[in-house]
Amino acid sequence: MTTDGVLLCADIGNSHTVVGLLDDGHVVDHWRVATDERRTSDEWGVLLGSLVQDSPVPDPLRGVAVCSTVPGVLHEWRDMLRTRYGDLPQVVVEPGIRTGLPVLTDQPREVGTDRIMNALAAARLFGGPAVVVDFGTATTFDVVSARDEYVGGAIAPGIDISLEALGRRGAQLRQVELLRPRTVVAKNTVEAVQSGMLYGYASLVDGLVIRMCRELGVPLEEVTVIATGGLAPLVVEECTVVTDHQPWLTLLGLEMAFARNVPAG
Image (cartoon, rainbow, N blue to C red; front, side):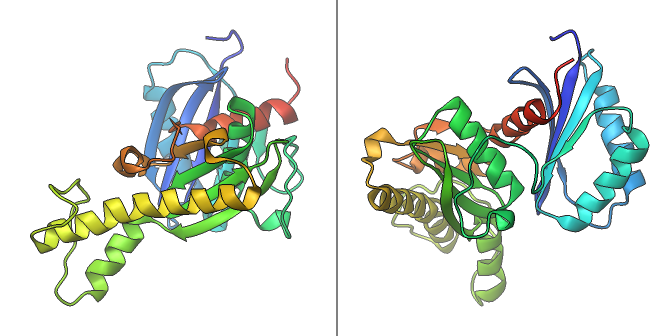
């Protein structure tokens, strides 16, 4: 452990919030909780306080770094951080925060802050060209150029919401657990849904990454493809293009953004 404590990082997503304690590039403890938009700042404070207090990590907090795709929840977090952690340095990723990563899109302010953190971590840890595939509520693809620039990406429906929509709209279909079926050519309805979801999304990832590389004019073998997100373990082994699986990519990006915006010492 570093002598000045650990950094509390939080990635507030549409479905889940991932909280981690980081120490110099290492996630030393972590939690995954539901992102409940009804939860007040006091409730977030009690939850976060209990998680940190019960952690076996002995070091005190040296700061907080947060990114969010849910404005209402971020509002409650801001209140909570001000009242409970106001004495600590804080970085909330938003337009104007220094990252050192050029964002070359039509509207840079519209890019999700979690996607920027993923791209930042990919550029610093792996170097471009790289593609980050984040398996969350949405499946997002973020592209880092050979010059370590964020140049854009793609967004597809996430696995869970696609599975939920299929169960709701399919008259003879029902909710199923997403497991690897015995065969791609399924012999029953449950495994047919599992095959379509698992292998279908793997093919989506492979096909889209190949198209991105072709558009960039970079051979696939020269591109690092990093999988992250809570649902990545379900699909990553079936994706032929994925070269690395880094479940804490967003949290690592938050640690990098904190270091760039809060002077050491």
